[in-house]
Each structure stands twice: as structure tokens, then as C-alpha cells.
Amino acid sequence: MKNGLKVLLVIGAIVLILVIMGVSSYNGLVTKSESVDAAWSLIDVQLQRRYDLIPNLVATVKEYAAHEEEIFANVAEARSKLAGAGSVSEVAEADAELNGALSRLLAIAEAYPDLKANENFINLQDELAGTENRIANVRRDYNEAARSFNTTIRRFPTNIFAGMFGFETADYYEAAEGTRDTPDVGDLFGD
Image (cartoon, rainbow, N blue to C red; front, side, top):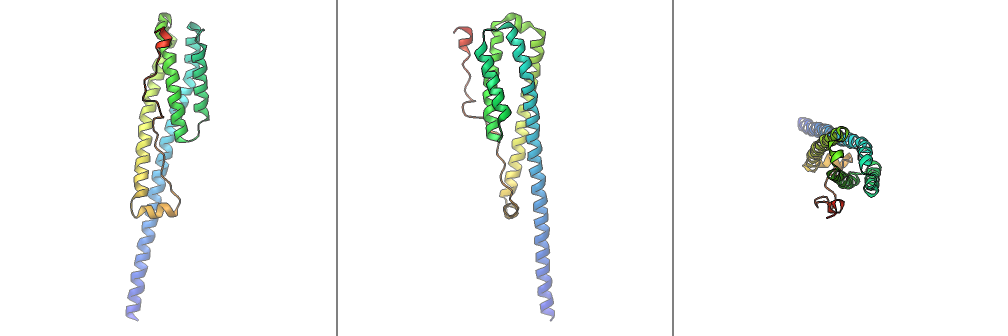
């Protein structure tokens, strides 16, 4: 009887340890998953801030460069794509397209000295530059949260509990194809 009791105590201790490990792993995964979601939310906030700045910037540039309709249409189209993007990769691709369109829009300012000196344009350009820096920072923070979460769910024994509870890896925010290429804005200056 004493040996049977010892076996039951050992089995009970093992079950208790497994339950504690499971609860601890689950809570850790939930915490890291929430960190990923919070970091994504910060990206969304900064993208929305830039999204809201763009109409003012376009309106200011339009006052000086009314004949640059194609660029204005490209900015509007890229802005719409970003607004409709759902997944991390769709957002990254639409964001890259918007960055290219904004680069071409800002390049127009070089051809219009009065626009470059316009206080409203300068303020909007400064706000946009600040927002771009914030976006870069929150992208980095998101990718770090995703890396930490992904590393955790791949480690043993947490990977067992991650699989049991349906935790999946988080996507990284990666540059879209072609974003490393310098946009050609020479046609704006007649080159």
C-alpha cells in the first residue's frame, strides 16, 4: 500500500508540474501575443496619422502645381490601397506604394521655389517627416515583438502548448518588393 501511495504521489506531482507549466506557458503566450497586437496598433496609428496629413499636403502642392494631376492621382490611389489593406503584407505593400507616390509629390516642390518657401508646406513636410520617423520606430518595435513571440512559440516545451491552444506565428513587417529601388523622378524636372 505504501508503494502504491508513493506512485500516486509521484504521478500527482508530475501532473501538477505539467499543469503549472501549461498555465505558465499559456499566460506567457497570451502576454507576448498581446504585445504583438499592441505593436501592430501603434503602426496603425502612425499610418493613420500620415494618411490624414496627405490630403493637406496634396492640397498645398496643388495650389502651385495644378498641372501635375497624374502624381495627385497616384497619391490618392496609393492612399486608398493603404486604407483597404488588411494583412501585414498588404499593409507593407500599400505603404511602400504610398511612400513612392509621396516621394514623387515632394520632388515637385523642387520645381516650385514659392512652394518650398510656403510656411504651410514646410510645416506639413516637417510633420510628415516626423511621422515617417515614428512609423519606422513602431515598425521596428512590432518586428521585435513578433520575433519574441515567434521565438517563444517555437521553443520546447512551449511549442507543445502553443500548438494545443492554436497560437500561430506573427508575420513580420517587411519591405514590399521594389521598395529598395530609388524612384525615378527625373521626368518631373525634364531630365
